[in-house]
Length: 138
Length: 101
Image 1 (cartoon, chains in turn green, purple):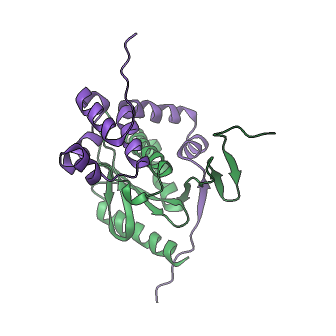
Image 2: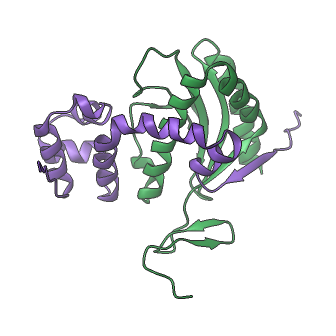
Image 3: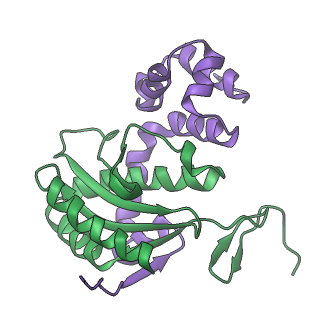
């Protein structure tokens, strides 16, 4: 079947777009999965807000070839290149929530590391730092 | 020496795929509903990124400060003025049309 311009093609390691530029892949880590389930049950509005911002980040990364240009008010840089995305940009009074991710530019992977509140921020940063160290080791 | 934990993860090709498979389509609708408040802002930011411009580069083009650009990009659509939208779009080189039918 002849491909139309703009069609997406499945490639070995994910999806490639028209110009053969591979899109970013999302890697969901076990730590994240636990927090994600908890937030879906206990704080659904906050989870929807951080996931909306995560979707905005995904679009930004897929739209350009320079991840370093990806700057937004809801992205907070943390040590080791970790990014914390907050719940900003959503209507309503939401509890401060942060989704921690690590953008691995060389392999085009976005690692989802954890979700936490403002109160657990320092403990969350220490546990996600450990995960990123493991990613860098591998 | 501390041993590093073996990494376990699952891969998804997009946020939509992840949400759909883990939480269901209702959640996807809920997230997309929230994104409706920033549709215009997001289009402007994507245009800047496609043009390969940083916030500082754009500020120089618009003859304003980088914090002004940051404020525009952090706004909800309802908080933007038409002037902001036209100036920003013009500076990143995209056409902006307002139509009233």
